[in-house]
Amino acid sequence: MILFTGFLNKKAFLLILALLFYTSFADTGEIKKENPAIGEEKIRIAVFPVENLSGTVAPVKEIRQMFIEKLGARGVDVIDEETLEKFMAKYRIRYTGGVSTEIAKAFKQDINVSGVLITSVELYSDANPPKISLISRLVSTGENPSVLWIDKVGLAGDDSRGLLDLGLIQDPKVLLDKGMNLMFDSMDRYLSKRSEEEVYRPSKRFRPQIVYRSPAFDPNRKYTVAIAPFFNYSLRKYAGDILVLHLATELKRFNRFDVVEMGVVRQAFLDMRIILDQGVSLVNAESISGVVNADLILAGDVTDYQDYPGVWGTPKVSFSAQFIDSKRREMVWSSYSYNTGDEGVFFFDLGKVNTASAVVSPMTWWIGEMMLEGSKGVQEIKGSSGQVK
Image (cartoon, rainbow, N blue to C red; front, side, top):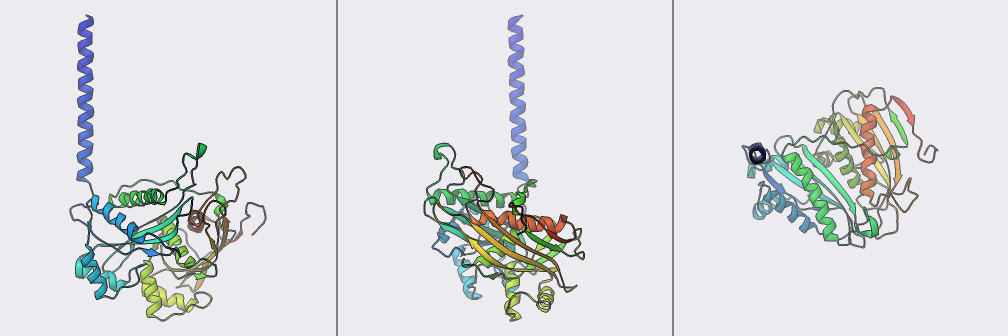
């Protein structure tokens, strides 16, 4: 009787193993079949030279090569260097921080490229502990270029020190590799069309300190937003360009905002010879929106944008933002935001934010969130100190 029972147990065990193997095999086959990164039509991507907005020397060639290798390993067709160089020489492309409508059309017609990967280095510091910030986006080609995917990463080697500094990263290459893996994981989810619901709701301490929202703004409709160049009053070089990229990234998270490719907006300003003087006028907003087919023009200025090398210091960010409804000729949103990386931190730097990139990300996210869910009219939001800033 005992032998018979043991035989049945072995038989049941083998059946369970066979079932698990079959399920695993079936799942693997399904994933391969539904691989939309390549799909029935293999996508073809051009990887632009990396734009360096850090103001310091950064390994831009290495970063670009890492993207090319990771895309190639995933099966994406990346155009070769010779083809890209000839194309850029033909159209005299020197600016690699965006794609104009003319260049997007040429990419599609001349060399059959379906997407252009644009990467900007916001911060690169190899001082111990190292710090990096990257922003990348994939822009479609053809008649109407649009931002298909955009994401960013801001890391410091001492973000997660852990017990006895076991989590401290002192090698810039290790930190860069970590950041690149995070960026490519995000891109890979887009290319694979994996719908993973992201839960992201940063601390309320990053909300704007002063907010105005017009009753004319309808949070239930969808808006196309063109982000104008931001004035830079800070000591940080390229701070205006950096903030534009952060705003584009965070607004893209909300399904009620479509963001016009920044290169298209830049080219429109150049073609119309608009020189910004203390902001975007209502006339300029109406003109630009007609060219780029935008409902709202987002403009503003940066008054402070600070990072720090090494261990000691505090990142600081302050800026104002205004959304202009070009059809109504009315400002429908205005806000002022100011935050530092050590707000609310009192005990052994726990919770401290070590890069300006990681500070400005939730600040810009809250603008989109409050535009869609905030109450109408004038609001003053108290800061952590209890005083209106």
